[in-house]
Structures are given as structure tokens and as C-alpha cells.
Amino acid sequence: MKHIGFIGASGLMGHGIAKNLLAKGFQVSLTAHSRREPLQDLLMHGAKLVERHADLSVCDAVIICVTGSPQVEAALEGPSGLLSQARPGLVVVDASTSEPDSTRRLAARCQAVGMTLVDAPLARTPVEAEAGKLNTMVGASPEVFTRLEPVLQAYCENIFHVGETGAAHVIKLLNNFLGQAITTAAAEAFAVGAKAGIDVAQLVRVVSAGAVNSGLFQAMAKTLEGDYTGLKFELNNASKDLRYYVHLTENVKAPSWVGTSVHQSLVTACALGYGQEMVPSLVKAQAQINQVNIEQGR
Image 1: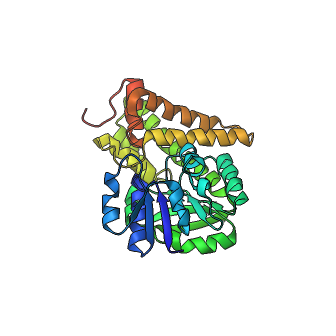
Image 2: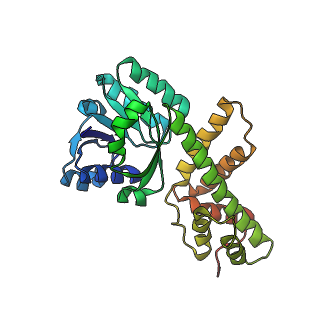
Image 3: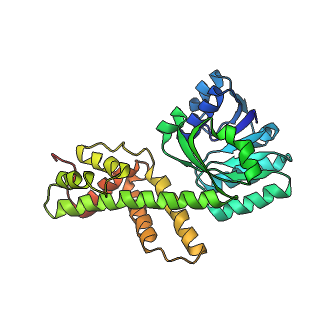
């Protein structure tokens, strides 16, 4: 696979992926959304801009890196989507965080016209995307995975083949549930501690020296000094991912007391106006709800 199409290169994650594909010698063709400015450096380094998603059907593979299932469905099934000009043999890689049911439905539609849909959602942040050190989990047959692996190696440090199509999106939702449970719990603990009158920095000292510590907790702890940039993931997207996770639990008939609570915490933060801020702003939401100051020195 030498010629890679890309849908979503203007996004924080997509830009880094496309940049690394170009740096590793792949030919890259892009479609533009409303914002073309983030694409200028990619075009300067040899990427080609095409008008419609369907025009990418000539590529060996097309990577879709967008917000979620509605956008992936539009990229495939829209009036100028990839399925409107289906080419047998084309491999489509959904690098978004999508709903597994939608992924499996789209995979069946692709298979019916000789195309293959692979789910390969991402972990880590835009920083690792720019550095070519993302993690990805891949749902594909062993044969397709073998063909696709050199492409994934251009922008990933760790690649996990986790099963057939759909399995990767299930694992991604489980991963994000665990992550958001930690960040939500940390924000709540800070607020309860502040309301109880303790020095929250002392809680951070204790946790940092024990088994509860993690990179996510440390990113949340930075908020005590007013730093809300430790996790570059928007609360609107975090809320969307947990909504997908709750849908998954409903579909498999699994009770989800914790997942539902985490989702509602994220929804509440978005409702309070923090949706376009990053995940650490959960601390701001908890401070507002509990009417306390959590940042040190305030």
C-alpha cells in the first residue's frame, strides 16, 4: 500500500497522522472540511487535495479520522461518500472512536461491494500523533492486518491486533470508560476534599506515592496549580465516547452503574459550559457545583 487517502486531516489527531505518512514516503491524498488552513503544511510537503471523498477510491487505502459514527457514516454513505464510487479491493480504516454496531453495519455494506472496512481507533494524544507515536487497536482479518501493518507503523508506536472487525471499537470504548472514570473520580475527590476543609495538595502527595497513582491522576493534579492542559481531549468528545459506551452496555444487556455515572458527570460539565475545554476542566465543573475553590492559592 503506497497511496493513502485521508478524511479528517484538519483535526488534531488527523494532522499528525497525515504528516507522518508523508514523512515515511507514502503518497497522500486529502479531502478538506470547512477548515483548509491546517492542511497547508501537508500540501506543501506533497499531499494532494481532492474535492470529494469518492475521489479517494483510487487509493490503496483510505483512513477516516473524524469525530464519531455520524461523520464516518457520512464519509462512506453520503452523496459523495466512498460507497458512491465503490472500488473492489479498497481498504477503509476507521481511526475514529465509533459505535461498534455502526461499524459492523458499515463493514457489511463495504463487503457487499468488494471493499473492506477495518476499525483502528487511536489512543494517546495529538502530541503523540505529531511524533508518530500513537497506539492503535485493530479489528481486521489476519490477512488484511498484515497488509495494513506497514501503514499503521508510519504513525503508531504500539499496534494491537485485537480481533475481527468491530472488536477494536469495543476495546476503545472500554479503554475510554476506564480513563474517564479515573479523571471524573479525581475531580470529585478534589471537590469533596476542598469542601471538607483539607489541603487537597496533601491528597495528591499521598496518592502520588501509592498504587492509586497514574498519569491520568497526575494530569488532573496539575489543575491545583491552574494548569488544565494535561490532557488534550475535549469534554464534548469525552461525553460522546461515554455515551457510546453506555449504548454498548445496553446492547449487551450489562448493568452500568459506574459508566452511567461517569457519563452524567461529563454531561454535567458540558451543560455548565465547559464542553469545548479539555478533560481536566472537570475540576472547574466540580468546583462550581460544590461552590468551592480547588486551585491552590485561590
